[in-house]
Length: 113
Length: 115
Image 1: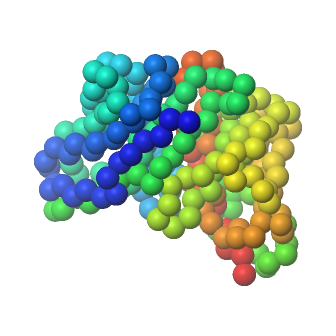
Image 2 (image 1 turned 120 degrees about the vertical axis):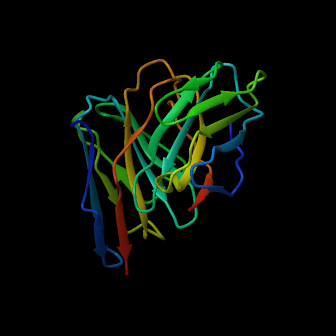
């Protein structure tokens, strides 16, 4: 099972960009990289995902290293509402054992006004 | 709006009692999942179901049971055999298609307290 490594916590000033790193050195060629975030007492919310190329959506950007062993979630202008725990996970191809998502402890992002 | 509904939001039970947590989705998703989250921890997979009438154990299935009689519903029973049942329980679903790019959709969780 491919696993990810993230810093426990990060801080950012409001309205500045935030780069949240994730290492996944055991990623296989067919694993997608997913990012979710969780506010206190709520379920995680999908943010973005990608395979090889960088991805952008209205919430964030995902930069994937050429060797795919690391990725970075980029929040272009942090707001107070972006304060959450961010999870980077890998999703493997559908198999007989099921397409399971494995969550680590994530990065707790604090946004300073 | 489509989504996942978990009920109730808070649940209190006495030790030794079984309790069932509800999870309903109207996203027409094939796959459904139950996760457990403890304070300061990530999510741990309890059970998952890829299709109706089929389910598989996750990493921490002991003391839990599930059923999947309908596509929309995936209830979780926390039995008296679960040694430490107090936790935040999250239900999720995904389209379960045979590509690996469909994201998980989560409910807002049920916080179970057993005393």
